[in-house]
Length: 170
Image (cartoon, rainbow, N blue to C red; front, side, top):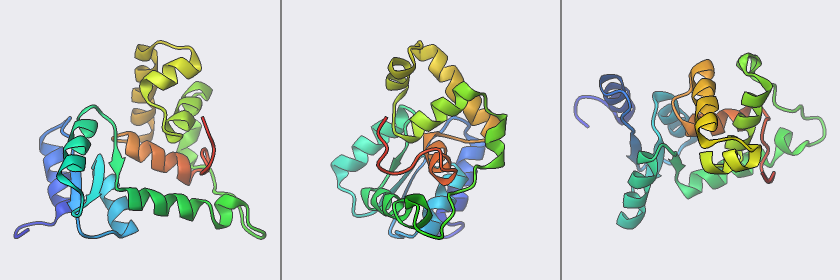
C-alpha cells in the first residue's frame, strides 16, 4: 500500500466510520501482526491463501458482529496456551488477572468467561437463563468498561487473563 500500511488503514477506516468492521487480509502469519490488528480494531484476521468461499463466509460472519481468526492462528494461540503457565508446568505461574477486570460485576465476568469459550449471544442467553437482549446489554457493558471493540478482543483478553484456558468446555 503506497500511503499507509494495513494497520494504519484499519485505524483510519474505523475512526472515520464508526460501526464499520474490518477484516485484515495478509501474508504475514506473525503473532505481533495479529495482536496489532486486533488492537487496531480489526474483527477478523485471515491469510491471503483463504479460499473465495471462506472469505465470503468471513465477511458475512463479521457483519453479524462476530470475529474470526485464520485457523492456523487459532491453532497456534491454543498451542501456546496449552503449554507452560497455561498448562500449569512446574515452576510456572498462572497468568495474572488483568486489573481492569475488577470493574466488572460478577455476572459480567461470567459472561466474559463464556464469550471466551466461544458462546454466541443466543447460547449465552440459554446457558445463563437470560433474554438475548439482557445478554447484549452485558456484552456492551463489558466492551465499554474494558474498552474492547469486539468479541475477538474479548476472547483474547479472556485467555490472557486466565478466565479461560484451552480445553475448557462451556
